[in-house]
Length: 172
Image 1 (cartoon, helix red, strand yellow):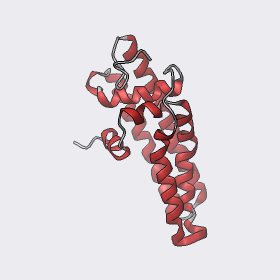
Image 2 (cartoon, helix red, strand yellow):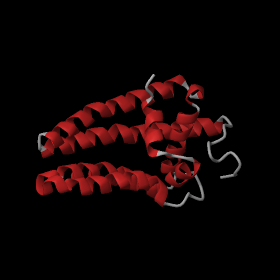
Image 3 (tube, helix red, strand yellow):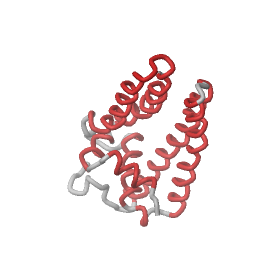
């Protein structure tokens, strides 16, 4: 069965080091605030620069891949952003052990991004900037809510005594 979560992790080639660096709040917030808007703007740039738009699209995709890798791992994992990233890591590596209500909500929130993505793609395709921007917002809001759910998963996991993947042998 196709697993969107595992597929996304494979595409991003996330290893322990990348997950640890991505737990830096600077990585989380710059990713939330820049990645999707930069990609939308890069795709939109075809209106202004035609075929040369492959350059900004390539740069935006490079930033999306680099972002989890360019910041140092945080000294602590107590911020909302760090807990969200580590909660997502727990969700991906120990999904069968995660409470059913968390798994259901994660799937619902991921699904709620789809209508926004459709509107965004339609806006980009048809050169309808309002649709592209509105769709981008409708795509991002459930993702932010998803990260918040991952914080809850992280907190429940740690409270139950579970080891955080990539942090098993540290006292972070």
